[in-house]
Image (cartoon, rainbow, N blue to C red):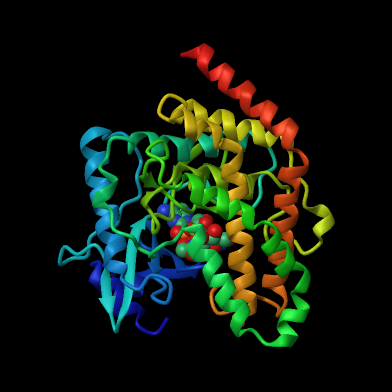
Length: 362
Ligand code: ADP
Ligand code: GN1
Ligand code: MG
Protein backbone atom coordinates (compact mmCIF):
# COMPACT_ATOMS: atom_id res chain seq x y z
CA UNK A 1 0.00 0.00 0.00
CA UNK A 2 1.75 3.19 -1.12
CA UNK A 3 -0.51 5.83 0.42
CA UNK A 4 -0.66 4.45 3.95
CA UNK A 5 0.20 7.84 5.44
CA UNK A 6 -2.62 9.66 3.62
CA UNK A 7 -5.22 7.01 4.47
CA UNK A 8 -4.35 6.87 8.14
CA UNK A 9 -4.28 10.64 8.44
CA UNK A 10 -7.92 10.69 7.24
CA UNK A 11 -8.63 8.97 10.54
CA UNK A 12 -6.28 11.10 12.60
CA UNK A 13 -3.80 8.22 12.92
CA UNK A 14 -0.05 8.69 12.65
CA UNK A 15 1.46 6.31 10.09
CA UNK A 16 4.84 6.25 11.87
CA UNK A 17 3.15 4.69 14.86
CA UNK A 18 0.97 2.26 12.90
CA UNK A 19 1.75 -1.25 11.74
CA UNK A 20 -0.39 -2.73 8.94
CA UNK A 21 -0.75 -6.44 8.26
CA UNK A 22 -2.96 -8.18 5.62
CA UNK A 23 -5.72 -10.05 7.43
CA UNK A 24 -8.38 -12.76 6.90
CA UNK A 25 -9.43 -14.97 3.99
CA UNK A 26 -12.28 -12.97 2.38
CA UNK A 27 -12.68 -13.10 -1.40
CA UNK A 28 -13.76 -9.55 -2.04
CA UNK A 29 -12.17 -6.68 -0.12
CA UNK A 30 -8.57 -6.06 0.96
CA UNK A 31 -8.40 -6.25 4.72
CA UNK A 32 -5.60 -5.03 7.04
CA UNK A 33 -5.11 -5.19 10.75
CA UNK A 34 -3.81 -1.83 11.98
CA UNK A 35 -1.89 -1.84 15.26
CA UNK A 36 -0.84 1.41 16.91
CA UNK A 37 2.57 0.60 18.38
CA UNK A 38 2.48 3.19 21.13
CA UNK A 39 -0.99 2.49 22.53
CA UNK A 40 -1.66 -1.09 21.42
CA UNK A 41 -4.99 0.04 19.88
CA UNK A 42 -6.13 -2.08 16.92
CA UNK A 43 -8.44 -1.45 13.97
CA UNK A 44 -9.57 -3.19 10.81
CA UNK A 45 -8.91 -1.16 7.65
CA UNK A 46 -10.49 -2.30 4.39
CA UNK A 47 -10.48 -1.08 0.84
CA UNK A 48 -13.75 -1.82 -0.89
CA UNK A 49 -13.56 -3.78 -4.14
CA UNK A 50 -15.12 -1.35 -6.61
CA UNK A 51 -15.31 -3.93 -9.39
CA UNK A 52 -17.84 -5.71 -7.18
CA UNK A 53 -19.42 -2.76 -5.38
CA UNK A 54 -19.82 -0.08 -8.04
CA UNK A 55 -21.20 2.43 -5.52
CA UNK A 56 -19.46 1.91 -2.16
CA UNK A 57 -21.29 4.91 -0.72
CA UNK A 58 -24.46 2.76 -0.76
CA UNK A 59 -22.76 0.29 1.59
CA UNK A 60 -21.87 3.16 3.90
CA UNK A 61 -25.44 4.51 3.88
CA UNK A 62 -27.02 1.09 4.50
CA UNK A 63 -24.70 0.26 7.38
CA UNK A 64 -25.31 3.69 8.89
CA UNK A 65 -29.12 3.34 8.65
CA UNK A 66 -28.99 -0.02 10.38
CA UNK A 67 -26.42 1.12 12.95
CA UNK A 68 -28.60 4.11 13.89
CA UNK A 69 -31.69 1.91 14.20
CA UNK A 70 -29.93 -0.69 16.35
CA UNK A 71 -28.21 1.90 18.54
CA UNK A 72 -31.57 3.44 19.35
CA UNK A 73 -33.56 0.24 19.89
CA UNK A 74 -30.92 -2.22 21.10
CA UNK A 75 -28.02 -0.16 22.46
CA UNK A 76 -26.23 -3.21 23.90
CA UNK A 77 -26.06 -5.03 20.57
CA UNK A 78 -22.53 -5.17 19.11
CA UNK A 79 -22.79 -3.96 15.52
CA UNK A 80 -19.53 -3.17 13.71
CA UNK A 81 -20.22 0.22 12.19
CA UNK A 82 -17.69 2.44 10.46
CA UNK A 83 -15.45 4.75 12.45
CA UNK A 84 -15.88 8.22 10.98
CA UNK A 85 -13.03 10.09 9.28
CA UNK A 86 -11.83 13.30 10.93
CA UNK A 87 -14.11 15.20 8.58
CA UNK A 88 -17.10 13.09 9.65
CA UNK A 89 -17.42 10.76 6.64
CA UNK A 90 -18.33 7.04 6.79
CA UNK A 91 -15.53 6.16 4.36
CA UNK A 92 -12.29 7.83 3.21
CA UNK A 93 -11.93 8.19 -0.56
CA UNK A 94 -8.40 8.53 -1.93
CA UNK A 95 -7.53 8.33 -5.63
CA UNK A 96 -10.87 6.65 -6.30
CA UNK A 97 -10.29 3.97 -3.65
CA UNK A 98 -12.83 3.70 -0.82
CA UNK A 99 -11.47 2.90 2.63
CA UNK A 100 -13.34 1.93 5.76
CA UNK A 101 -12.05 1.71 9.31
CA UNK A 102 -13.82 -0.29 12.01
CA UNK A 103 -13.05 -1.43 15.49
CA UNK A 104 -11.01 -4.64 15.69
CA UNK A 105 -12.86 -7.12 17.86
CA UNK A 106 -10.28 -8.27 20.36
CA UNK A 107 -9.86 -11.87 21.39
CA UNK A 108 -11.93 -12.91 18.37
CA UNK A 109 -11.31 -15.51 15.72
CA UNK A 110 -13.02 -16.44 12.47
CA UNK A 111 -13.03 -19.86 10.81
CA UNK A 112 -13.32 -21.25 7.30
CA UNK A 113 -14.71 -24.55 8.58
CA UNK A 114 -16.27 -25.65 11.86
CA UNK A 115 -15.22 -28.44 14.19
CA UNK A 116 -18.09 -28.55 16.71
CA UNK A 117 -21.88 -28.50 16.18
CA UNK A 118 -22.07 -25.96 18.98
CA UNK A 119 -20.19 -23.46 16.81
CA UNK A 120 -22.86 -23.94 14.12
CA UNK A 121 -25.56 -23.34 16.74
CA UNK A 122 -23.82 -20.17 17.93
CA UNK A 123 -23.29 -18.79 14.44
CA UNK A 124 -26.89 -19.50 13.42
CA UNK A 125 -28.02 -17.83 16.63
CA UNK A 126 -25.95 -14.72 15.90
CA UNK A 127 -27.05 -14.35 12.29
CA UNK A 128 -30.62 -15.18 13.34
CA UNK A 129 -30.43 -12.50 16.03
CA UNK A 130 -29.45 -9.86 13.50
CA UNK A 131 -32.39 -10.96 11.30
CA UNK A 132 -34.71 -10.78 14.30
CA UNK A 133 -33.57 -7.39 15.58
CA UNK A 134 -34.10 -6.03 12.07
CA UNK A 135 -37.49 -7.69 11.59
CA UNK A 136 -39.26 -4.39 12.31
CA UNK A 137 -36.71 -2.28 10.44
CA UNK A 138 -38.05 -0.94 7.14
CA UNK A 139 -35.88 -2.95 4.73
CA UNK A 140 -36.97 -0.77 1.81
CA UNK A 141 -34.69 1.94 3.25
CA UNK A 142 -31.71 -0.17 2.20
CA UNK A 143 -30.47 0.20 -1.36
CA UNK A 144 -29.00 -2.68 -3.34
CA UNK A 145 -25.20 -2.70 -3.05
CA UNK A 146 -24.99 -5.28 -5.86
CA UNK A 147 -28.11 -5.24 -8.06
CA UNK A 148 -29.90 -8.61 -8.11
CA UNK A 149 -27.25 -10.10 -5.82
CA UNK A 150 -29.26 -13.19 -4.82
CA UNK A 151 -31.74 -13.20 -7.68
CA UNK A 152 -31.33 -16.77 -8.82
CA UNK A 153 -32.85 -16.02 -12.22
CA UNK A 154 -30.25 -13.31 -12.85
CA UNK A 155 -27.49 -15.69 -11.73
CA UNK A 156 -28.85 -18.35 -14.08
CA UNK A 157 -28.96 -15.87 -16.96
CA UNK A 158 -25.39 -14.84 -16.19
CA UNK A 159 -24.45 -18.52 -16.36
CA UNK A 160 -26.22 -18.84 -19.76
CA UNK A 161 -24.35 -15.76 -21.03
CA UNK A 162 -21.05 -17.16 -19.79
CA UNK A 163 -21.85 -20.41 -21.60
CA UNK A 164 -22.55 -18.51 -24.83
CA UNK A 165 -19.24 -16.70 -24.75
CA UNK A 166 -16.92 -19.43 -23.44
CA UNK A 167 -14.56 -21.20 -25.85
CA UNK A 168 -15.25 -24.80 -26.86
CA UNK A 169 -12.15 -25.90 -25.00
CA UNK A 170 -13.25 -24.36 -21.71
CA UNK A 171 -16.76 -25.77 -22.18
CA UNK A 172 -15.36 -29.23 -22.85
CA UNK A 173 -13.45 -29.06 -19.56
CA UNK A 174 -16.57 -28.07 -17.67
CA UNK A 175 -19.01 -30.29 -19.60
CA UNK A 176 -20.08 -32.37 -16.62
CA UNK A 177 -20.65 -29.33 -14.39
CA UNK A 178 -22.54 -27.50 -17.14
CA UNK A 179 -24.89 -30.48 -17.46
CA UNK A 180 -25.30 -30.60 -13.69
CA UNK A 181 -26.18 -26.90 -13.64
CA UNK A 182 -28.81 -27.50 -16.33
CA UNK A 183 -30.15 -30.54 -14.48
CA UNK A 184 -30.82 -28.53 -11.30
CA UNK A 185 -32.70 -25.76 -13.13
CA UNK A 186 -35.84 -26.92 -11.33
CA UNK A 187 -34.48 -25.14 -8.24
CA UNK A 188 -34.75 -21.87 -10.15
CA UNK A 189 -38.25 -22.76 -11.40
CA UNK A 190 -39.38 -23.43 -7.84
CA UNK A 191 -37.75 -20.21 -6.57
CA UNK A 192 -39.57 -18.25 -9.29
CA UNK A 193 -42.88 -19.83 -8.29
CA UNK A 194 -42.59 -18.57 -4.68
CA UNK A 195 -40.45 -15.45 -4.78
CA UNK A 196 -43.34 -13.00 -5.05
CA UNK A 197 -45.47 -14.64 -2.40
CA UNK A 198 -46.50 -12.27 0.41
CA UNK A 199 -45.53 -15.10 2.73
CA UNK A 200 -41.92 -14.77 1.60
CA UNK A 201 -41.42 -11.09 2.41
CA UNK A 202 -38.38 -8.97 1.82
CA UNK A 203 -36.48 -8.56 5.06
CA UNK A 204 -33.19 -6.88 5.95
CA UNK A 205 -30.75 -9.72 5.32
CA UNK A 206 -27.00 -10.05 5.74
CA UNK A 207 -26.62 -12.00 2.43
CA UNK A 208 -23.16 -13.41 3.20
CA UNK A 209 -23.49 -15.59 6.28
CA UNK A 210 -20.55 -17.80 5.36
CA UNK A 211 -18.71 -18.92 8.41
CA UNK A 212 -15.71 -16.62 7.99
CA UNK A 213 -18.11 -13.70 8.46
CA UNK A 214 -18.77 -14.62 12.09
CA UNK A 215 -16.44 -13.70 14.92
CA UNK A 216 -16.13 -16.21 17.75
CA UNK A 217 -14.59 -15.73 21.15
CA UNK A 218 -11.07 -17.22 21.12
CA UNK A 219 -11.51 -18.90 24.48
CA UNK A 220 -15.03 -20.29 24.18
CA UNK A 221 -17.32 -21.36 21.34
CA UNK A 222 -19.50 -18.28 21.89
CA UNK A 223 -20.31 -16.16 18.85
CA UNK A 224 -19.43 -12.49 19.40
CA UNK A 225 -20.83 -10.69 16.37
CA UNK A 226 -21.33 -10.81 12.64
CA UNK A 227 -19.03 -8.94 10.25
CA UNK A 228 -18.80 -8.20 6.51
CA UNK A 229 -21.88 -6.00 6.23
CA UNK A 230 -21.37 -5.00 2.59
CA UNK A 231 -24.42 -6.91 1.39
CA UNK A 232 -26.80 -5.97 4.21
CA UNK A 233 -29.91 -5.18 2.16
CA UNK A 234 -33.46 -6.30 1.48
CA UNK A 235 -33.85 -9.95 0.50
CA UNK A 236 -35.32 -13.32 1.44
CA UNK A 237 -34.54 -15.22 4.62
CA UNK A 238 -33.42 -18.23 2.52
CA UNK A 239 -30.27 -16.27 1.61
CA UNK A 240 -29.04 -16.15 5.18
CA UNK A 241 -30.13 -19.58 6.34
CA UNK A 242 -28.94 -21.16 3.09
CA UNK A 243 -25.40 -19.82 3.25
CA UNK A 244 -25.08 -21.20 6.76
CA UNK A 245 -25.90 -24.65 5.40
CA UNK A 246 -23.46 -24.12 2.55
CA UNK A 247 -20.55 -23.36 4.83
CA UNK A 248 -21.20 -25.15 8.14
CA UNK A 249 -22.46 -28.57 7.04
CA UNK A 250 -19.25 -29.92 5.57
CA UNK A 251 -15.97 -30.39 7.44
CA UNK A 252 -14.14 -29.00 4.40
CA UNK A 253 -14.52 -25.62 2.74
CA UNK A 254 -15.53 -24.65 -0.80
CA UNK A 255 -11.80 -24.79 -1.66
CA UNK A 256 -11.47 -28.52 -1.03
CA UNK A 257 -10.65 -30.15 -4.37
CA UNK A 258 -10.96 -33.76 -3.17
CA UNK A 259 -14.68 -34.14 -3.77
CA UNK A 260 -14.88 -37.43 -1.88
CA UNK A 261 -14.44 -35.38 1.30
CA UNK A 262 -17.57 -33.33 0.63
CA UNK A 263 -20.24 -34.88 2.82
CA UNK A 264 -22.69 -33.25 5.19
CA UNK A 265 -22.74 -33.56 8.96
CA UNK A 266 -26.30 -34.17 10.06
CA UNK A 267 -25.73 -32.92 13.62
CA UNK A 268 -24.55 -29.58 12.24
CA UNK A 269 -27.76 -29.31 10.24
CA UNK A 270 -29.78 -29.74 13.39
CA UNK A 271 -27.61 -27.19 15.19
CA UNK A 272 -28.12 -24.59 12.44
CA UNK A 273 -31.89 -25.03 12.34
CA UNK A 274 -32.17 -24.97 16.14
CA UNK A 275 -30.00 -21.88 16.50
CA UNK A 276 -31.81 -20.02 13.73
CA UNK A 277 -35.29 -20.93 14.99
CA UNK A 278 -34.32 -19.87 18.49
CA UNK A 279 -34.23 -16.32 17.15
CA UNK A 280 -36.46 -16.38 14.08
CA UNK A 281 -38.91 -19.20 14.89
CA UNK A 282 -41.67 -16.84 16.00
CA UNK A 283 -41.15 -14.45 13.10
CA UNK A 284 -41.01 -16.76 10.07
CA UNK A 285 -44.27 -17.26 8.13
CA UNK A 286 -45.66 -20.78 7.56
CA UNK A 287 -44.29 -20.71 3.99
CA UNK A 288 -40.87 -19.62 5.22
CA UNK A 289 -40.85 -22.52 7.67
CA UNK A 290 -41.60 -24.87 4.78
CA UNK A 291 -38.58 -23.47 2.96
CA UNK A 292 -35.99 -24.26 5.61
CA UNK A 293 -34.39 -27.14 3.71
CA UNK A 294 -34.96 -25.41 0.37
CA UNK A 295 -32.81 -22.50 1.59
CA UNK A 296 -29.72 -24.73 1.48
CA UNK A 297 -30.55 -26.05 -2.00
CA UNK A 298 -31.20 -22.54 -3.34
CA UNK A 299 -28.03 -21.02 -1.95
CA UNK A 300 -25.67 -23.89 -2.78
CA UNK A 301 -27.03 -24.10 -6.32
CA UNK A 302 -26.59 -20.34 -6.76
CA UNK A 303 -23.01 -20.48 -5.46
CA UNK A 304 -22.20 -23.43 -7.74
CA UNK A 305 -23.40 -21.57 -10.83
CA UNK A 306 -21.59 -18.40 -9.71
CA UNK A 307 -18.29 -20.32 -9.48
CA UNK A 308 -19.03 -22.08 -12.78
CA UNK A 309 -19.87 -18.80 -14.55
CA UNK A 310 -16.64 -17.30 -13.25
CA UNK A 311 -14.69 -20.29 -14.56
CA UNK A 312 -16.38 -19.92 -17.98
CA UNK A 313 -15.68 -16.18 -17.94
CA UNK A 314 -11.96 -16.68 -17.33
CA UNK A 315 -11.92 -16.20 -13.51
CA UNK A 316 -12.61 -12.51 -13.28
CA UNK A 317 -14.52 -12.40 -9.95
CA UNK A 318 -13.27 -14.91 -7.40
CA UNK A 319 -9.53 -14.88 -6.67
CA UNK A 320 -7.87 -18.19 -7.64
CA UNK A 321 -4.56 -19.76 -6.69
CA UNK A 322 -4.52 -22.19 -9.65
CA UNK A 323 -6.31 -22.15 -13.04
CA UNK A 324 -8.93 -24.85 -12.38
CA UNK A 325 -9.88 -23.66 -8.90
CA UNK A 326 -13.30 -22.25 -9.80
CA UNK A 327 -14.16 -25.50 -11.61
CA UNK A 328 -13.11 -27.47 -8.53
CA UNK A 329 -15.19 -25.14 -6.36
CA UNK A 330 -18.14 -25.82 -8.66
CA UNK A 331 -17.71 -29.61 -8.34
CA UNK A 332 -17.39 -29.18 -4.57
CA UNK A 333 -20.64 -27.20 -4.35
CA UNK A 334 -22.54 -29.62 -6.62
CA UNK A 335 -21.43 -32.52 -4.41
CA UNK A 336 -22.70 -30.61 -1.38
CA UNK A 337 -26.00 -30.00 -3.13
CA UNK A 338 -26.31 -33.70 -4.03
CA UNK A 339 -25.75 -34.51 -0.35
CA UNK A 340 -28.80 -32.42 0.59
CA UNK A 341 -30.93 -34.34 -1.90
CA UNK A 342 -29.49 -37.73 -0.90
CA UNK A 343 -30.27 -37.05 2.77
CA UNK A 344 -33.60 -35.35 2.15
CA UNK A 345 -35.70 -37.68 4.31
CA UNK A 346 -33.45 -37.35 7.35
CA UNK A 347 -33.16 -33.59 6.94
CA UNK A 348 -36.92 -33.09 6.60
CA UNK A 349 -37.37 -35.17 9.76
CA UNK A 350 -34.90 -32.95 11.60
CA UNK A 351 -36.57 -29.75 10.40
CA UNK A 352 -39.91 -31.04 11.71
CA UNK A 353 -38.35 -32.07 15.01
CA UNK A 354 -36.80 -28.61 15.46
CA UNK A 355 -40.05 -26.87 14.52
CA UNK A 356 -41.99 -29.01 17.02
CA UNK A 357 -39.45 -28.31 19.73
CA UNK A 358 -39.66 -24.62 19.00
CA UNK A 359 -43.47 -24.63 19.04
CA UNK A 360 -43.59 -26.46 22.35
CA UNK A 361 -41.22 -23.90 23.92
CA UNK A 362 -43.28 -20.85 22.98
P1 ADP B 1 -14.35 -9.83 2.74
O1 ADP B 1 -15.50 -9.03 2.23
O2 ADP B 1 -13.19 -9.75 1.84
O3 ADP B 1 -14.77 -11.21 3.05
P2 ADP B 1 -14.42 -9.32 5.62
O4 ADP B 1 -15.11 -8.06 6.07
O5 ADP B 1 -15.18 -10.57 5.79
O6 ADP B 1 -13.90 -9.13 4.12
O7 ADP B 1 -13.06 -9.43 6.44
C1 ADP B 1 -12.11 -10.46 6.16
C2 ADP B 1 -11.66 -11.13 7.46
O8 ADP B 1 -11.08 -10.15 8.36
C3 ADP B 1 -12.78 -11.78 8.28
O9 ADP B 1 -13.05 -13.09 7.85
C4 ADP B 1 -12.19 -11.74 9.70
O10 ADP B 1 -11.27 -12.81 9.88
C5 ADP B 1 -11.38 -10.44 9.71
N1 ADP B 1 -12.17 -9.31 10.28
C6 ADP B 1 -12.94 -8.45 9.58
N2 ADP B 1 -13.48 -7.52 10.39
C7 ADP B 1 -13.02 -7.78 11.63
C8 ADP B 1 -13.19 -7.14 12.93
N3 ADP B 1 -13.96 -6.05 13.06
N4 ADP B 1 -12.56 -7.68 14.00
C9 ADP B 1 -11.78 -8.77 13.85
N5 ADP B 1 -11.56 -9.41 12.67
C10 ADP B 1 -12.17 -8.93 11.57
C1 GN1 C 1 -17.80 -13.78 -1.34
O1 GN1 C 1 -16.67 -11.54 0.69
P1 GN1 C 1 -16.75 -12.97 1.03
O2 GN1 C 1 -15.50 -13.74 0.77
O3 GN1 C 1 -17.29 -13.11 2.45
C2 GN1 C 1 -19.10 -13.37 -2.02
C3 GN1 C 1 -20.25 -14.23 -1.51
C4 GN1 C 1 -19.94 -15.68 -1.82
C5 GN1 C 1 -18.60 -16.05 -1.19
C6 GN1 C 1 -18.17 -17.45 -1.58
C7 GN1 C 1 -19.93 -9.75 -2.44
O4 GN1 C 1 -17.91 -13.57 0.06
O5 GN1 C 1 -21.46 -13.88 -2.16
O6 GN1 C 1 -20.93 -16.49 -1.30
O7 GN1 C 1 -17.56 -15.15 -1.61
N1 GN1 C 1 -19.38 -11.97 -1.77
C8 GN1 C 1 -19.71 -11.17 -2.79
O8 GN1 C 1 -17.11 -17.82 -0.79
O9 GN1 C 1 -19.81 -11.57 -3.96
MG1 MG D 1 -15.99 -11.99 4.45
